[in-house]
Image (cartoon, rainbow, N blue to C red; front, top):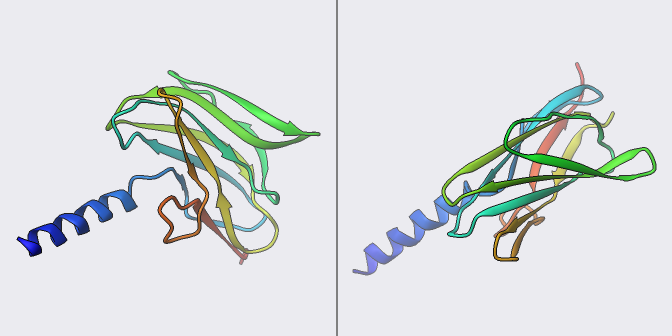
Length: 146
């Protein structure tokens, strides 16, 4: 019985590790323009209604790609896009995907994408922690250009 409980806990922990807001690709070249995809699963029983992605300080968003079934808006400070908010009803066990284009920073290193996922019942999940946290931010590793 104890082994079954432990196994169940491991399976649940493993599934939770893969079920958070992600940004792909996980690696990109310094100083280049990259097409990024934000993947938003609805893990629980309440529909996701929106996701807000903070744009890291060294990133420059050049385009937010329009798609069907959702709307988006940007928040700016001066001419710089500091956040993108996508609105779409994503039912439980479904996934939404959103695309934008950004110019990467000139220096290499990790870039953390902090996100807030909002739900139909008024609650939210902040994906802002470091790797290993319950709700980690997505990370893209910027590598030096050859």
